Length: 363
Image (cartoon, rainbow, N blue to C red; front, side, top):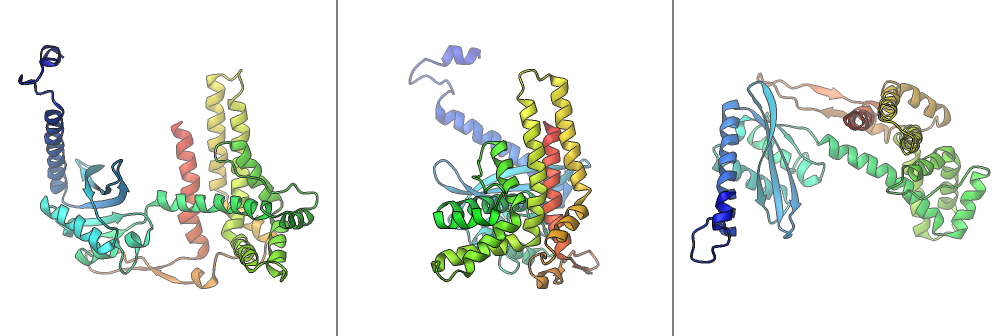
């Protein structure tokens, strides 16, 4: 502080070490010291896992974010290493860039025991993705898709379907009349607001109440030869998504969750609310969602009673053998058979519920 006061306004020709160039150099030196400290820890730990993703910065330069995870003094830690400027997103190029960076700091890819990226083909591709390129260098580097990214894709896909249904029917008076005729006394589908819980709850609730009727309306439009080919194809595509057991179960679950969240939100906005009541409301909501976690079979059974023909995607996918390739030091590997139900539970239902509970407890 005293140095800044003394030298801050001395003008050119006076050494103050306060110029932008000097400050950037200080930051660069400190960054290198931190990086070398992390590298030393990583080498001492020996085994590690990697996680990378690309994102553009404010100057529109695409960068590869490199993160490592290892055990330090018996505690798992996750450390950011560096942003690497990249020119393309091909798996081979990304692998070369990553391996060159690790090699420059003496980090052996042979000690890698895990890798995690998003589900893009260039990253997660089984035969030519980045994970496959890394496995060519180290067979023990087990690939685990990013659970958060998978969850975001699932949740986004579901709510996109809700919005697409509204857009499809509301953009044509003829289609809207077909929908209202099929729904009868049920309320029509609604617009999905991005900000208001009440609007989201209403939109999903409307879909839940009129699910069968909405599906009938879509099938009717898809079979109507008087409709334009594009309209019929869109109706058929939406109908096929709605016929999947995963979509029906998600509608059932989200309808209950959003209804309870909306009620809690209304209570939290009361001007007479006290802190102890707010805490109890959050705890009650977390317990409610926790109970949903333990009652998946009940939701599935309820859905199957109303939609006996629904199934988890294609039957061929349900019985397909998925090789997990969990390689041990003796070279053995086990092959796991996973059903459509198990896949939906482990990759969608449980991450979705656990993420909601975690965020509620944090708040």
